[in-house]
Length: 334
Image 1 (tube, rainbow, N blue to C red):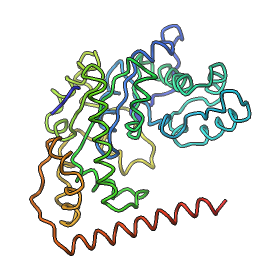
Image 2 (cartoon, helix red, strand yellow; image 1 turned 135 degrees about the vertical axis):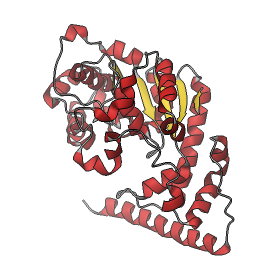
Image 3 (cartoon, rainbow, N blue to C red; image 1 turned 90 degrees about the vertical axis):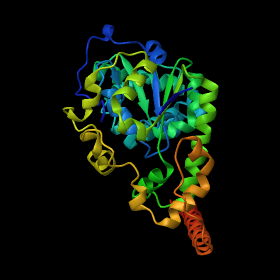
Image 4 (cartoon, rainbow, N blue to C red; image 1 turned 120 degrees about the vertical axis):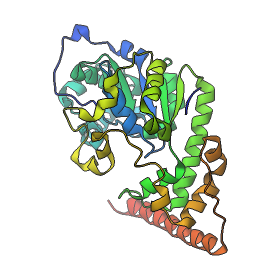
């Protein structure tokens, strides 16, 4: 179901003639963003788009979510340099594979706004990839859609969603996620509700919803619809993204991005039936029921049990105590 309302793409460092590459204003006019709850399939969409001859979606920047320059950097040179040092030390910057000296030289010539810095990054990615149109894939930018839509008034947004039970099951396998599963389910609900609001605000010319399950079940018509939404012609090679010449991601990302080196399949659909305890299945459904049904996901039919409520309360309380402990350690330790 589609509702319209690199590193996939990290290429070798080849620099075509600058005159043939779009300037920042042209890049801004054609930008698109791939967003979604983490572990929903954004990397798959990124890989598909980057296999198009005109489209390049570089590694995640998390720019507006994590790395935007502070307001004081606009007029304070020291703050500007400190922010540059933090950015260039971040994994998201290292993953871009760009020349830091060239980047800092270019952004020094801008007005130091987040928009201007981001467009320099996109321009350098266009030059590196040799492709004229840029997309950006950072799942957490789903929280920044309103700002992005204002900064880039013609930008389009591809929102991919996935069954919350599979999303939570996948998130719980990530080493850096140690929250209670109920907090993960609540996060899915809030983000999907926010996405529905953004879809209503932006309308079908700028926003499209795509279900992961539909994409992997019948890829070609859904990829064709994505191309139509972007105003690009469909290329059959987009479905052969797994045959790219480079891995497309860092070695550290192999465990959660490695499947983009294989053809599309449905292996990850309904994994929750095997990976989640019945208590957790019911808890996720309890937290997300209205959004699940609205998005076309059917409940399992499980009923609550008193002991499940008690276990959930204990797990939730333990997770909250861990969060408090982490916050205190950050405040106390240097």
